[in-house]
Length: 279
Length: 220
Image 1: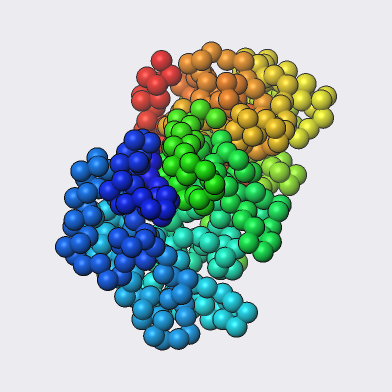
Image 2: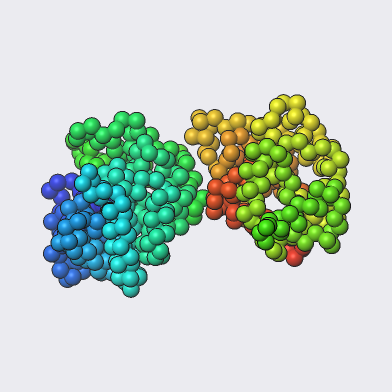
């Protein structure tokens, strides 16, 4: 297994190059690039700018684990507004192109947002249609679309069986799940998601979660690896069980008031323990 | 009208119901022995998902806890004649007296020594893990099922562990043998656990006549 972390964790004021150096010093193998998050990687970034970024990543001795985006929350493939849906298609297709430029084979998207006025069945059908439409692009580029489970934020695909059924409905080997083991909260157990969805997992996000606390106002339920309620031994064993040996990508909320770079080192150390199984 | 599958399953079960009189030549598919309780039936349902033409000379005891000595002896005779008996125990769910009786029968007929069942507490599941580690017929992890029955056997006979505890074994008898499962697999099959399917499918294939030579060498 290889370790990665998003470029959105780079401490404020740290340049792309210095952020990469920091990751390398902390022992990461790769970096997750978030389209739309930091100034160096936006929807308007050109191919040549991306190639320059790739060079910097390689110069730092790193690889790109996957291309994610932070745009789906505003422009989603399930939106009623056709212009927003088209915008979602555009940024996802750009992610696929970026994946090719950065020489990685996976992207992350958030597909389907259920709200009080965008009901579940409507979102399900529109999301399904959209992914069926995107799948041939992904296949042609040989890039897997990983649909992230953001269960409580999306109010969509809330159980592993339903997620599995949804992916079966999409029916493409190029569309799978980007599994986040911290996003399951009180609605289940991460290890069971791994067991059920095993062969369809494209990438994995690691973080911990405080269960039984809910989400209240701006208070987050997410925390650093080992500080929450995830059963890390079961999660590690489940990866072995299903034969997942790919990228583990830390997705941390910046929690450190002082020495924010320390969170990057501490996370790398925790990931080493997960990978080694020394729990 | 019975479906083709129902007729097929009935054909498999009949030789056992008739007192295991079927000869080796007549038994071309695997046979299922189950008991009339929900756990055993659930397990049998799971194993039935694997019934396929081509499986051969295997008797599956699904979630059993009340096999009498005479049936155990007949199973041993079948093993000596070339059949593999896969004995999935449900002793985790029975009374101490019932356990003692079954343990005695297994010891006297097959020389298999069982230790007291261990209930897997939430603490144990968190520290030791949730999964059974198989090393034969291939390396795989399957879900544990609330409790395990440790078996005292040689390391070479052990096919699965829970933590450091052997919980499944295989032993050759004549040209057949016994596979004892101290952690249930049938319910996992019913729950569509991929790894359990792979393990049992390979187990049945590895104990069939076409792979007998390979099995012998694996037994050492």
